[in-house]
Image 1 (cartoon, rainbow, N blue to C red):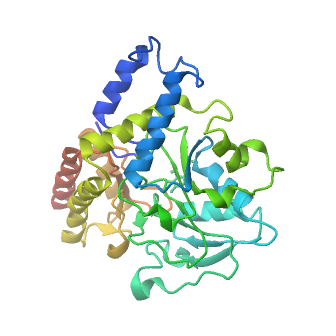
Image 2 (tube, rainbow, N blue to C red; image 1 turned 135 degrees about the vertical axis):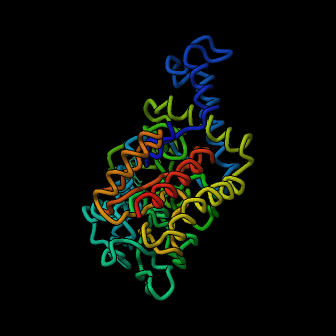
Length: 364
Ligand code: PLP
């Protein structure tokens, strides 16, 4: 089937085949990847390759740590304020552009009084602060410890094209659902985090890229696992790391480098695929209503509604019968959400496009 799930999500077929092959016996090791110690030379090499692949794909500067942490992106909603707030800087700024931004703010508020510097709630998160006049202006608060934003809101399907300008305030970004789909200037960020289960592998590992100086002097009174510096000092092995997830992340980043040819190329492919679907929305706007304002449409999650609930159910049932699966939108947005992450083949997007065109003709 073509799987349009928002995550865990589609994986490159060649990577799945390699996993299948290595599941019984990792070449040169004589045991499954799931059976070997995280302290073994074989696993240490896998972890080092995953880190160096990320460093080269994203051109991560040397003054940044690349950490592999468990607990998903949700744990980062708490670890970030726990590590980055201080008695001198007890508050941070949040740009709220969708459901995940709201969740991150709610957790952060347990650690201080955060400032919402911009929110798209009034228009059900269909736009971004960068959406020209419709977005509205915002300013960083003086002395904020950091500014947090979500580069791609997975549920609403709105995605920043540019990096927000925060002056000297460190920028913290939840890149969970658009990680590794385009080049990023890491030096503009204080911290980037992304759970793997959309573009970078299976659920269970979260990548945190953080500027070293931001985590160096954090209190040792924090619970050990929740203190970034402990992960950095132990090279992501302060406890047993999610070995399988890190191994798949290594294979995915190999695939991005060797088969795709890097993140600029990936971005081009994603742009071309997303255009196939957005063109159908634009050509049939009396039938399909896109959720996101056109200037902030996501290249990862395409969200739209049909004229009625009945037609939405019919669309989902007929799509499923054509092997186009997991297309239901989140209940807060309704309608359809087609998640077209890195590994979605163009043939899958073309199939969906053709189905959307036919469905519109037959039902409008
Ligand atoms: N942030 C974004 C943008 C997401 O899309 C998700 C999951 O879908 C999360 C955070 C939460 O990630 P996890 O389930 O790994 O905690």
